[in-house]
Image (cartoon, rainbow, N blue to C red):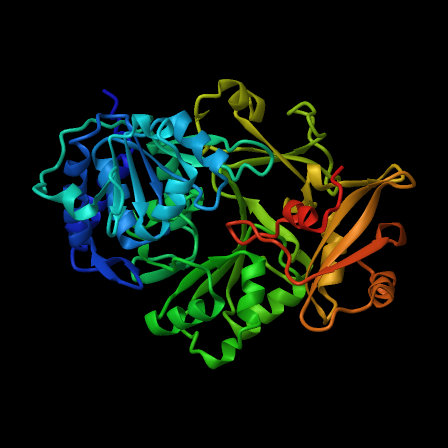
Length: 517
């Protein structure tokens, strides 16, 4: 006899928390909080509301910011056996219509504050498969109904829906910066594994409270939601990014953990954090971009002594660098593979079994049990990005002799100047060390002389430094070689950001009218 217990589906996790921690805070936002017992009861009501319109496996789409109400409606759809998909609220009309047309949701849930934006981007053809649009707030259109109407007459009875660990539970969309968005499908199993991996990292416990600024459209939101439903800690949602508001919430709610991208951390550091009581913070994490040594030192001195870094994507979680490992010498590293994950460095598009030596740059490929199973409606794209279970990331990097991973940048951001390959990252870091430079990006602009001309775009704190001063700064830097320094400099009031707060070099180039390669 062999005992075979399946992993529990995500829809059942909140009931386990309600049973053991009914009166503990589960989720909170600026409008209020909900305990695990309340969250479970409202999720069951939402589930029975969904069952008026859906069957097992149907899709429910969300055009929302992070909030308690949104989270209850997500959990309700899961309990009804649905596949949920959070849509990018800042996407183009074309991208949004693509996501809706591909997935054909039976129900769409929209924030009242975003209802006008949603209506402007979609059309009746796109909504043909949609049975109802639920507005979290007051409905104003004929096809909309309020959350109160949707929930009217529903019971708190557990739906009789069979869901397995290998069933798709969520479709996470890429940003679509390199084409139409891709909908990566994750199962109950892969999301459970992501949640467990996050919940077992040092510093996480059920008495803590995490402050998240992640938009639901980024898969990390669902990973953090899963982690909380596993009993790791409660979660406070900051609907819109504001460094001053972040500081206020940390002080008022005694937040213990938070994760931001380096651009956001620099904004926090520029907002007089010493004026706030941040002593409750036990650990902070930086992700998404390289963290400079200057920023690291300031974070430890002014925000929280314990800092970690991580590397991952919509497709897969990859590595983590813990505080004890995060030394000045390893400041540029994103750590070692998380538990059960393999990372290799190979020649771009090369054989998977021909790993490059230590300190040699190549393409990063990752294999992990928390990987997605499919790109929604596109098996060809699935096979293109996953080869024998290995994810071809498109990122360039190397591993040192101790196995720590370093990211050099996207392979499509690499500059080829006079036949020499140049990575933007070290140049951006050198420019970022200048006291008058707030943010810097380095791009390749087509040139007959160079092939691609190394070009810097600068966002300054005050009066921008002159081109000659910046050039001298680069010449004196020991981080870049002479042939790598920028040949042209542009100054902008602000560098464009993606929805996740990362620097958007392509959009910034477009705003300046610079040709792309």
